[in-house]
Image 1 (cartoon, rainbow, N blue to C red):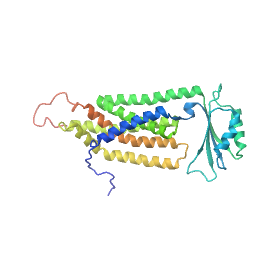
Image 2: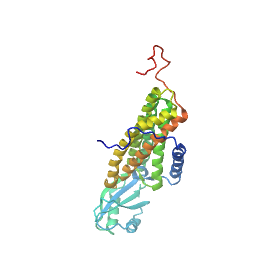
Image 3: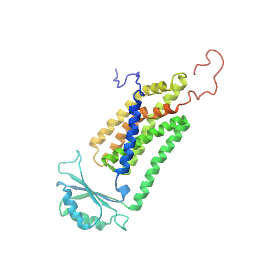
Image 4: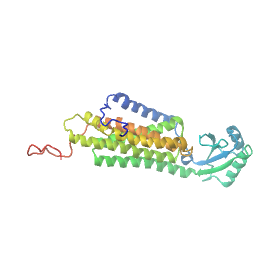
Length: 322
């Protein structure tokens, strides 16, 4: 006896509330664009240039005292935030100190690090620097360009693959679904001002690959059903295909989310942004495979049977697919 999360046969009409599902996604994409251009992203040191210092102390972090101690050093824009994590020990207090790139310096000098450490030790003698990360302004600009090209390049490569394997309507549906997933993820990061660094770019690339994999599964079944059911309306074929792959979709996404939720709760603050991005991406990626990509294919229409150039002739078994 086995547990079934989804019945063997389902008959869900995924197009019934297309105005809410598809229209709602358009509204959210517009909202994400507005958030991106108004609030912007909270770029990490990777993209802004500068130095990120992680401090640890047995005393409670006093952000105001830290800032007052660093002010006389004239380091420019300094951001200090306390880091909270349920996995920390009761006497483990962590803070993140971000210092802008210094004029004429590609990276922060050891003398500056020593000055910062001495200033913080004056208000908290137990403070230590477990990690110091520094990125120059020139390197950060190059990283931004490379990150954009990597995401766009992956999407273009995927579109070409789907176009060659299926039809251009499927390729367009796939790229709209990917734009939906990436756009909503960026909008969420802009809304909550979660730190956006190179690890999030890696998460976006993971989201793109995971989302298109789920979409291709639905498209592949749709292509088979378009050949099998030659007179069934396209909307019914797409619904049938989504229902036939629903069990696989839920099982794959569900098991992946279990692992991600464990990492989100217990993985620590260092990887929390990365894991959060992938978790959100899998949710919206599964959604877009069912409610976005298929809607685009339905709007554009598709050739019913491209495996045969003309109707076969012969005996009474000629119309039976092998």
